[in-house]
Image (cartoon, rainbow, N blue to C red; front, side, top):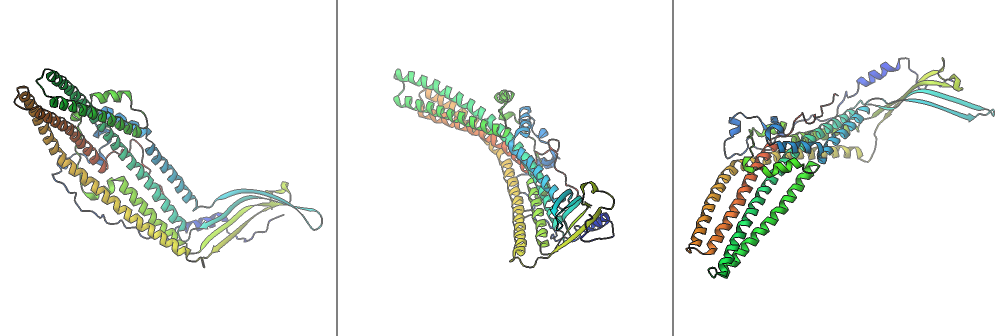
Length: 484
C-alpha cells in the first residue's frame, strides 16, 4: 500500500533544502556591536620614569613565565601547579562544556535526519487485519532561520566559548603569580624563623648572664625580670613564625594540587630573598590592557554574547517557519517494503505567528537588553579594576626600592646602637633598660627588612601578572575561534 503524500512537489528534495539553507542568517536582529570606550585615564600614574620601557625590555604579556622566573625550584613548582591545580582544571573543563554548547547551537541550524521503520496491524470492517509497514528517512520540525534567531543563538554560544578560553588564560596567569608569591612568602618565613631562633638564643644567653650577675649582687631584680620578658617575647615571636610558616606552606600545597616536593624543601633552606632577582617589565599604555589582559577580553566576549542574545529575543516577534519532511517506502507486507513502486515522500511546512502572549516576547527583549547593559558595566568595571591593579603595582614598585634602602640603613644603624648600648651597660655607664630597648629595636628592624624585601619581590610579581604576564601558548593551546 503506497502512502499518499501530504504535499507532493516535482522538484528534487536536495536542491530545495539547499535553497532554503541559503536563506539561513539572511536577516539578523542582532544590534551592531560597538566596543565601549575605556573609562580610565590615557596614562598610568607613575612616580618614576619607566626604566624598563627605556631599556627596551619585553612586555610582560610577551615574556613567558619560564623566562621571568629564574629560580629552578620555583619554575618546577609552577609547572606542577599547572598540571595539578583543580581550579585550572575546572577552567579547562569549562572550555569543553562551552565547546559542546556551541556544537549544539550549530546543530540546531541544520535538519536532523532520522531513519524510521514502523509497522501497524489494525482490524478492518471486513473482519480481517490491515497491515501497514513504512520505512525511510525523516526530517522532523526543521526550523528555517529566516529571521536569524538560531544564528543569533549560535553567535551567543560562540562568544561564550571564547569567553571561557579567556577565563582559562586568566586562571593560569593568576595561578603562576599565586605560586610565585607563595614561594617567596615561604622563603621569607624561613628567614624570619632563622632570625627569631638566633634572637631567642642570644636573649637566653643574655638572661643567663643577667641571672649570674643577679646572684652575685651586681644586677637588680628589675634587670633580671626585664631579661626574662625579653626571652619570652622572642619565644612567642618564634612560635608565631612557626605557625605562619605552616600556614603559608599549606597555602602553597593547595595551589600546587599536591604536597611540597623534597627537592623544593631542600632548595627552600638555601634560598634567600636578597638573592632573588626579577626582571623589570615595561608598563605601556592603559589601552594595551584591552588586548593583553585575558580577563578584560573575557568580559568583552561576555558582552558580545549578551548583545547577540538580543537578536534572538527580537526574532521571537516574527513568524517561525518549520518543515517536516520524509522520504521512504510503505507497504501492506513487510516483504514488500523498499520494493519498486512503494516509494514516496511528504513535506509539511508550518508557519507559527505570535499573536498574543501577555507581553512575554517584549519582556524577553527587555531582559536581553538589561543583560547587555549589565555586561557593559561589567566590562567597564574589568577595565577600571585592571587600571587600578597596575597603578597600585606601579606605586609599590616606585616606592619599595627607596623603602628597602632606608630599612637596610636602619638595620645597620640599630645594630651599631645595640653594640654601643651593650658596651655602655657592661661599663656601668648606661642602664640595662637602654640595652633592652636597643635589642628590641634591632629585632623589629630586622623583621621589617625581611618583610620589605618580600613586599618588593611580590610587587614585581604582581606587576608582571596585572600586565598580562604568565600565559604561554606552549603550556596549553588557547581555543581558536570556530568557523561560522
